[in-house]
Amino acid sequence: MYYVYMLLSKDNLKHTYVGYTNNLIKRVKLHNTGNGAKFTRGRSWKVIYKKKFDNKSEAIKEEFNLKKNYKLRKKIKEKYL
Image (cartoon, rainbow, N blue to C red; front, side):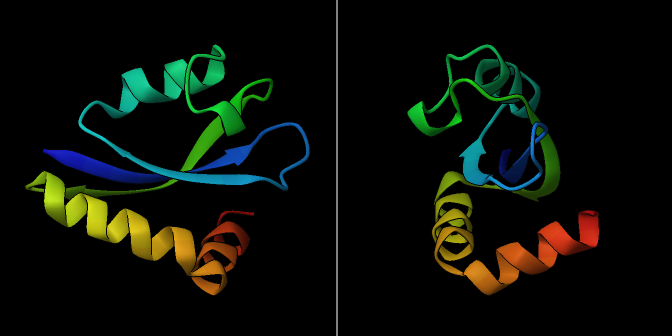
């Protein structure tokens, strides 16, 4: 089982990050301790979107689409706020 997720920075509620993983809790902890992706270092993050997939290839496709679709990312962010 894989997850596609979107994070929102807690400090200014401005920055978002999209990724995929098979262990969402562990991955968010890594981001928040500075051991995740380089872009996420130095900030605290909260999950504002997650979607479950049965296989890795579907998750990667969805992650790619969400990363490139800024309108959808903005819509998700506004829905959360």
